[in-house]
Amino acid sequence: MASALTDKLSRLVKDLRGQGRITESNVTDMLREVRMALLEADVALPVVRDFIARVKDKALGQEVLGSLQPGQVLVSIVNRELAATMGEGVSDINLAAQPPAVILMAGLQGAGKTTTTAKLAKHLIEKRKKKVLTVSGDVYRPAAIEQLKTVTAQAGAEWFPSTPDQNPVDIGRAALDYAKKHFFDVLLVDTAGRLAIDEALMLEIKNLHAVLNPVETLFVVDAMQGQDAVNTAKAFKEALPLTGIILTKTDGDSRGGAALSVRQITGAPIKFAGTSEKLDGLEVFDAERHAGRILGMGDIVALVEQVTAGVDIEAAKKLADKVKSGGGFDLNDFLAQIQQMKQMGGLSSLMDKLPAAMAAKAGQVDMDKAERDIKRKEGIIHSMTPLERRKPDLIKATRKRRIAAGAGVHVQEVNRMLKEFEQMQDMMKKMKGGGMMKMMKRLGG
Ligand code: GDP
Image 1: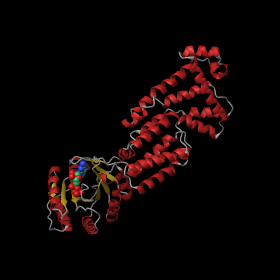
Image 2: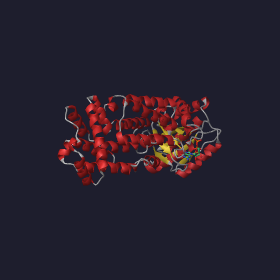
Image 3: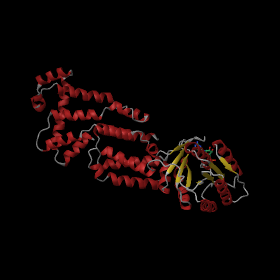
Image 4: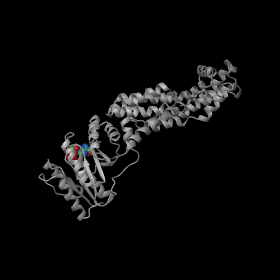
């Protein structure tokens, strides 16, 4: 992914770590970043607009703004929505038909139809123990028929001969007859490649579809197509009742956006992804992993969960109630806050979860120093008597020296911590009602 996005996301993580606060305005900011990420990943613009609108609807509802963990909620909305758009769960090839189950392969020339036909044959033979026949309806390129013959043999399936002087519909009929007579479970039909959308060829494949009545009509699309995938998908969707998509060449340096576009335009599930030129380079499509790839988020969801898991919401509410009802904010409360922050930031361990580039960026913020700082403050408060913690005003020069010695720090550190405490106490005093909740959000999540 572009490094700009990595930068943005490391900034996001930084925010979540120290004082994760998410307001209406940074929900909008975060969505702008998601939008950029989608466009950078080559998702088609209309698809991006639609997606962002859906997420924004949900995010600006009470779900995020009313939450004590808005960051987590927002990220999970984005991810959920992305995975939902991409298709949840996995869907293997449907063979629920009177044998032979016919599978029709459609797509542009060069998309990888012939290769994928053989990959599927291999998959069905090895994983589902089926007897598979292939046939090519590409009467325009004799080389295409030969290519299918070769790869079919490699896949261990049987190939049904066809010649350039035949009509594709006749070829389809003959192959279907042969498959029935010889008890094949599956007939895979490779079709003529189109360089671009072409009326005559679209009509031809429609006729082929009518004759064969396939249980699966699979749209094979090159992941590298990016923005163009939308137009191709639209045309095929209008011509044929697509039942599934196979995304090829996902091993290339495509940015993955075609998957989202094609899936949204056709409404058909992405069933497999091609991962190499070889016949075993076919994987069941993993929507979640692909969603992660599009946003370049790595394990950001897991990260956010870990950051926010440490927030003790009950304790935060109790404190809010206490301050609201006039009980003062003392050093015990301050200690509780510090301890929460410590829980949130088992920071160095979180680094392992980030993609390498992001971790390097985030690493520039000195985690160790932040953690040492929290520990020192804790040590200082632990060196105080219960009375001092409840009434910090009592802490004058002599007590400060004793406390510093007990915690093994300089007196200046005690002063610095007390000053921070006073600032927080000050803020607490100014907070009323909703303000208090905002404050909690700032502290907690
Ligand atoms: P067709 O014209 O649609 O039948 O496309 P082909 O099956 O002839 O494939 C076109 C090219 O893409 C060939 O060089 C294939 O080896 C290559 N190809 C197909 N699928 C994949 C894939 O998943 N990964 C890679 N790297 N190459 C692929």
